Image (tube, rainbow, N blue to C red; front, side, top):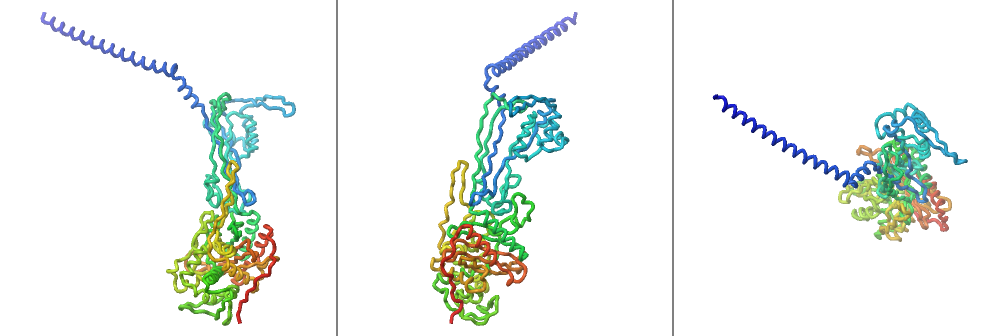
Length: 606
């Protein structure tokens, strides 16, 4: 009887536990019902009420955006001859997934005469063999390219538009083409350092390609369309196109014909004297336009890798050399401008001159002579130049060289230009203060030296050398580059006196080789020591000649520089080369022959 209360209590506990379990089950069931209602409601909203978002999502999955590459602008010479341009090429590609998704396909052809259409069925292997034949590839190589599970793979690259069209006509599913641009240089090495090049990664390197990259670069367009799983455009879907805008055409002042002639002449100078390099510049006097900027061993932008690294630049604007005696015309012009001399001023010139403990001599043996300033310049006398030039203060010597552009970049639109080397006059040592009078202890690029003579020829007005003629935009608008206003360095009267002295180099010496039949010409030779590459001492010499013609109204300057020619300094000459290049320029531009008598100022006084 005592066990009955215990059993009763145990039963009550079980009943209570069962009630709790049932309550939890009801709550769980209610929660599940609410969750199902929420999910069901969302499905109804997505499927029944959010149709637009679903459609947009589906369209996004089908949407393909194809880049329409813009063509890089052309680089042309002064007459419109193409020096650089971009052409369309194609890469043949494959979607391996799509290609292997069929066993046979149909190709429809139309008879060009009757217009009758014929449908032919080909197997996948037959299509593969036809593709290999069109591309002139081995069947095994094509099979390897199309086999796999990639959605994109190259079969071959850089094929012509004609070949791409033949591939398209095969109509093989999964085979596509990709348009790309390729930079080509039709004139090869003619003007290579001027034009520059674009590397395979699309980087503009060197020349106009680099400095005018922003103008040459176009803006890519795009084509947006919808495609099915096989990559084929859905014909009923809209196609949106944003056309590409091609880059600007850059027209240079360079004349391709003169450039070629000058390059050949520079190469001949280099090879004749086994020199390190040679350069020739041709500049139009009144505008500063560079007609030719020629370097020996000019590289071919189509095959840059075939050239030595040292040749992948323009030495005419990047290399500096001591100008030597060509600088004497600056000293003479400064003396005349300052009223310290005239071309006929008289000087007693001994065999050697010692000033402030520094002794100077000439390249030829002579006694004590009674020379005019013109005679000192004509025979390129260091002794006489030091005597006459000593009338200029150190600051005046420095200032005139700066006015002529020495020690600063010319501003030509080419990369890597050197400003040259001109130490402040306060830092000149006891010898340099005199050697700068005849072009030693100072360094210039060949182009800088050419522009010194352009200044003299242009009645004393120095111009920035121009190499860009104009820009032509994609819409045909032509933007002409304005001419530099220039800076007057010396007066027209001083410039004329300097020109008379330069003509005397030709008329009063035995340097007749520069004479151009029918034209008066003048110029100045220059020889200087070439600093060693290691910066210690000198190694060889630099030889140059810069001249102008016709002297009654100079139209062009031709500057020739040869670095480290082999042999005696007396056996190296640029006179004949000047004659040939300047003659070619004058004839090419129909410059009228001279009608006045040459100037021949006396070299000596009595």
